[in-house]
Amino acid sequence: MALLVTNVRWQKEADPVEALCKHLQISSDNLLGFELLKRSVDARRRPPVWQANYRVELQDEAKVLAKGLHGVRAYSKRDAKRYQQIQLDLDGDIFPSIHRTIVIGAGPAGMFGALRFAEGGSNVLLLERGGAVEDRHYHVRDFWRHRKFNPESNVVYGEGGAGAFSDGKIYTRKRDGELGWVFRRLVDFGADPEILEEGWAHLGTDKIREILPNLRKQIVKLGGEVRFGTCVTDLLVESGTCVGVVLSDGTEERADVIVMATGHSARDSWKMMIDAGAEAEQRSIRIGARIEHPQKMIDKARYGSERGELPAASYRLVSRPSKESGKRGAHTFCMCPGGTVVGATSQEGRVVVNGMSYSGRKAFWANSAIIVEVTKEDFGSDDPLAGVEFQDRLEKKAFEMGGGEFNAPAQRVSDFLNEQPSVDLPRTSYTQGVTPSNLWELFPRNIAEGLKEAILFFDRKIAGFAGDKGVLIAPETRTTAPLRFLRTEQMEAIGLPGMMPIGEGAGYAGGIASAALEGFRAAEVQMVKYTKA
Image (cartoon, rainbow, N blue to C red; front, side, top):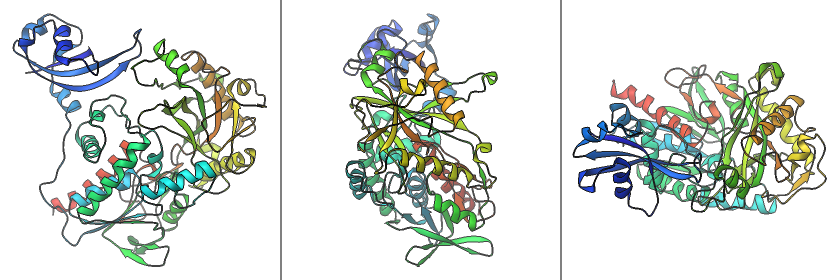
């Protein structure tokens, strides 16, 4: 037997044995062994503290349980399933030697899907329209610093997908089973092992750039091929089944299965898939703006003081107005403590913003998206791509309001709440420049009202949230895909068997971990066919 011991004070340099013995009121001789399961900051305490959960083995566990200590109980099978980091390795090749898989898109879904197919013995060809992360880094830097936009290798397109230039959040309550495979692989390729334990784990843009080449090398080591700067322009369909792809240079590639992991912004690829016969439906989305504050203000509001040795404070807030108010709900999204607001468009003549931070989260600012619900009725059409057109209209209008050159329209929070245009702005992290604007002229009225309602509500949770130190930078439109491709239980596209639409671009994921899991499951579904044969 073992015990689950929760809410133990944790300090980086301190001896955990001493903390556990004090918590359990025992001598060190009684402690046979322990395992750190999870750690996180309890910001409700003053001052806030790190707390940890442990699996503990004792000589006399029954005696300790009899004390009735808070947060101490028998370690159950349910706990084992929740915390166990399962390494899902294959005993041998599952796919026949002639099996071939084409994976389109090298974001989390595509990369981890290609890896899992390769682990199973499939001959994998991974195609990515953008550049390898080593080259893509320079393309993105030129865009942010000098406004030199590369339509094929940018913040959205390229190895790692949109997540490569973000905070790299991998928040998830579960770390077992399939997700355990994802987390273990991340550590294998260079992620800090602390992600296995930290409750609010993140990678950081700088660490992601180190992990991706190692992941790619493993795919190649297993016999796969990775091609960058390679755009798929059409799908090969024979007898109603997708059997291959056509590349921009006119060449054709065929395979047993085609995995479409396009990401949330490959609008031309979605049209190509629908034209080829894949069925899709509209999907409600959320859009809004990035709100930026000094990080010290957030620290003080969350911790009651400056953070000291604690991590940069973060928040996750939700606004749920009553139905009688007629206001739309909103929530914060992709909060980046110690981060920056960055340009994230994939098209010329458009402005899109996102948040990013490095692993140390040491920037002066904190930012988060505040996004408001947008229903399918707002799109104004039954066309599956109507949501894309809705997003695009906002992005184009934002470009015009910014004055061109990828400047983003921005507004002081206080001015936004008073519905009056800003005439000046405080310094922001957005390197391409911000233009004082009135965001009520950018967003439809119901979205702007939802933003206002949310900001006022969030100000009750975080002092100063609605104050003069806050700036709204807009628009944040690419939070998710505005359509979903219909799939069978085997994850094949309805209307186009042989093709597997997966990840955020297919409407089935929302973030690095869930997208990577989509890639894993796509391979597992295909493996079942051969293990049962």
